[in-house]
Length: 143
Image (cartoon, rainbow, N blue to C red; front, side):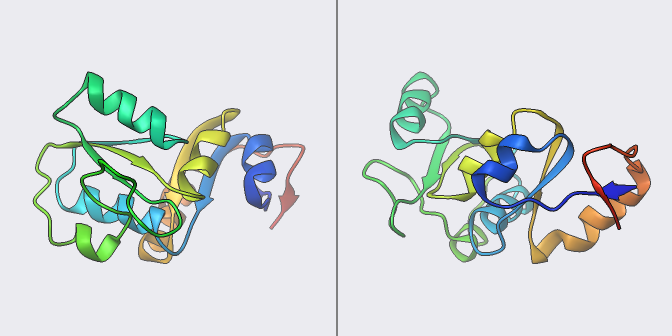
């Protein structure tokens, strides 16, 4: 397996194959925590307006997100994994927008598969990549 390490949005935009978007502070951990609390799915979106538009179409979805550390007006929850850990999200669908993390996920359009990584799930990501054993790719560096 070959691994290429890229950073920021430009790295996400050029990523191909299996891509791990790593955001170790909040958005990745909020996604992980929401799934642990029973959320059915999480829809990352780039902007607040897009999130509100989806919520308008699907009023049963929950809005999670932040801008400058605070939840935007009209949102159900912020981007706090600690607060998400106290929620019952059984079968709920979540729309998430953040200042950085969701933009990285959305930018990885060339990727075959996108994984969300954090310290909280690093072992699971490593095990998945070992099991999947992605093919070598000419643009990567051997590790």
